[in-house]
Amino acid sequence: QVQLQESGPGLVKPSQTLSLTCTVSGGSITTSYYAWSWIRQPPGKGLEWMGVIAYDGSTYYSPSLKSRTSISRDTSKNQFSLQLSSVTPEDTAVYYCARRPTHGYDYWGQGTQVTVSS
Image 1 (cartoon, one colour):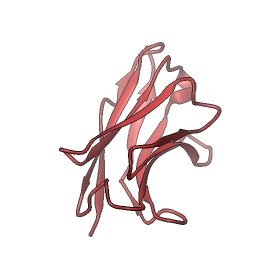
Image 2: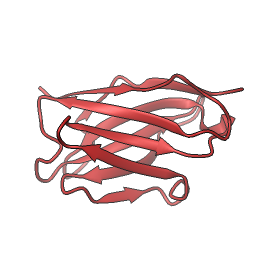
Image 3: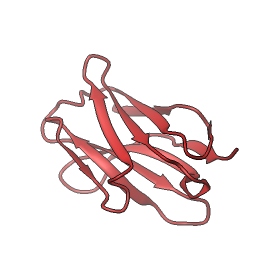
Image 4: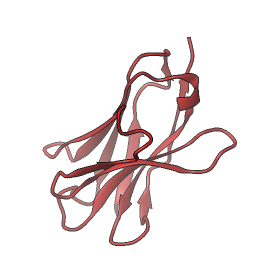
């Protein structure tokens, strides 16, 4: 059973960088051909895909967030991380990490609330 767990600060000040980590258990983030995504849901809105890091370390980002987003990984800890720079209150959301096989998502973290406020 694969499990994902998000961790990081729940409160970030405007203009700072939001940093979250997803710890994966029950499966390796280097296993072909899975990809590991970050997805968020602002209050009252739908899910927004932010970006992904694939099993081989390649990354892909949402065009709307690409200039502010970075996804990296630590294979020794079986973790992948999200950094979102220059945050504003519009970045307030529940942030999820999820595993993507060839199609769709099969495992999700429980989500973590991040609020951007001074």
